[in-house]
Image (cartoon, rainbow, N blue to C red; front, side, top):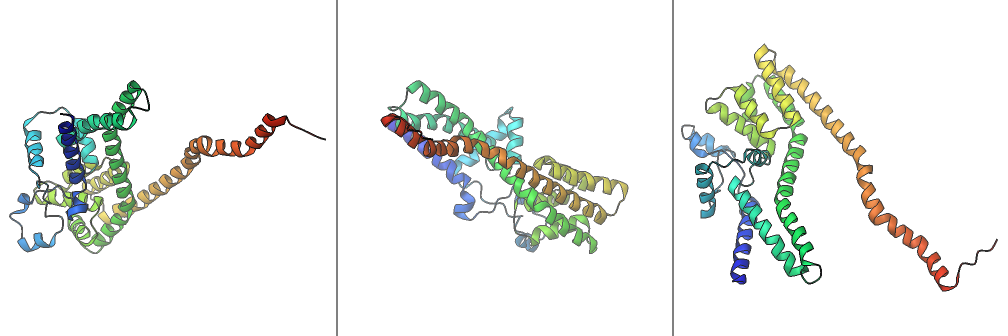
Length: 301
């Protein structure tokens, strides 16, 4: 019975790992747009658009089951859904919950196997349950931070390219489409592709930009969208708004770098006191202590 449970847990965790890293293992491109939205478009343009093709996210039957259950079950996990969207939807809601249950079960099981004989079982169970419960949350928060860091790094350059295209005579949404198609795929270009697709589906530019800001939920993106919406409403030239935003976001990124540099010495205090200072004290004080233990200290003046 124990072997069967262990085999089920290992197979489930293996599936989640394969699902998480499927793009690296099988060369699939990440996108969240359905190709059924674009049946009326030119097939040649869709073939050239690297964002119109959705990867095969249903390459295992379990994924299809999770998607059907998410549509049928009224799950009250609005905050968790928002966090998954901010992370780029690496997993669906039920898939993440299944991952959390597996971690909650698998971490204590592995802890008992490896540490059950060395430490008290109550302590091992308590610590392993806490780790298994919070480990998926830490993973998701790390995905969000990594994605926001990538978007924060790419946003000023994307705005400069949009400014060049708009200054050359293109409409803003056509400039977005041109920049997205010509640049290497990234988190920001995928989100901008979603903005362009929403306008192609009939939404206004203001609604598409607000949805873009809601999905990313970053101060830089909120400021960028707010400036574009106000420029569109007041009739201000879009190139002037993009110039202003490019300078502001570069200044924000510079201040963010200064903030991280000022935090670095404080973050170094913990490893300094825990790892470096005890070693220095041992190196300096160990000979004195050994001499004292062996025969006392002979201090001559």
